[in-house]
Image (cartoon, rainbow, N blue to C red; front, side, top):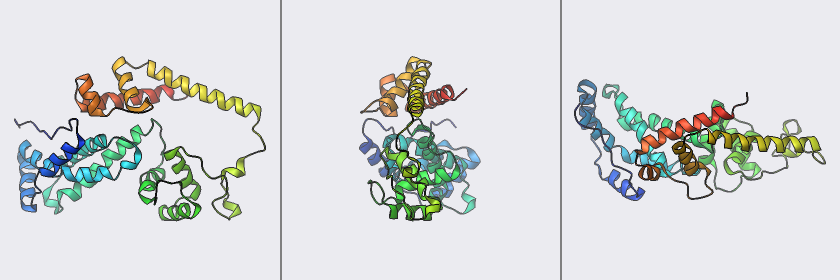
Length: 280
C-alpha cells in the first residue's frame, strides 16, 4: 500500500468540486466487484480510490437533502465523504449488493452525527424518537413557513409522535413563536402553551429566568475562555458570528492546516464546552 489515497480538494469553489466529482465515470458492477476484491484481498489503495471517486456524486446528492439545517454544504459533503470511505473499507462484493446501496447508511450516519454535534451547540434531540422527528421534519414540511394545525397533525400521525412534539421541534429549528391556541379540540390532550399561561408571571419566576439566562451566558463565556486560542477562534468563526460564518476549508486555508484537522479541533472544543457547561 504505497499509493496515497486522495480525493479532489474542495478548494475555494464548491461548484468546481461538484464538477470534478461528476467527471469521474460510474463503474459497472463487474468492475466494481473487481476493485472491491482487490481492496479486500490485497489492500489495494488504488482500487479503493477508484471506488470512492466513482461515488462522490452520490455523496453530493445525499448532502443536498440536508440543506435545511443551516450548515455549510461543503462541510456536509466532507462528512458524507468520510462515511463513503468507511463504507468502501467495509464493503464485501460477495454480499450481492451494489456499493451505492451499501454506502447510503454510512454516508447518512456521518452527516447525521455532524448535524447532531453542531446544531447550534445544543442537544435538541436526545432520544431515538426525537432524532427520527428531527431528521424527518424538514423533508415532510411542505414549505419553510410555520405549519398549520392540519399539517402538524398529519406529520405527527406519519411519525407516530404527539402533535405538540412536532410543534416543539419546529420551534427549535426556527426559533419562531408558536401558536398559543390548542392544536386539537381534544381537551384531554390539550398541551398548547395557552394552557400553562397565567395572568402574569410571578416576580420570582422572572428573576429565576433571568438568573438562568445570565448563568448560561457566563457559562458559555467561561467555557470559551478555557479553550486555547486556536480552538476558541475556530468555534467563534464557525458558530458564534452573527453572519459570514466560516467553513472548514476556509479555516484550513487561513490556519495552514487540513480541513480534517480543523474538524477534529472543532469537535474536541465542542465536547469540552459541553462538559464545562454541565451542572455540577
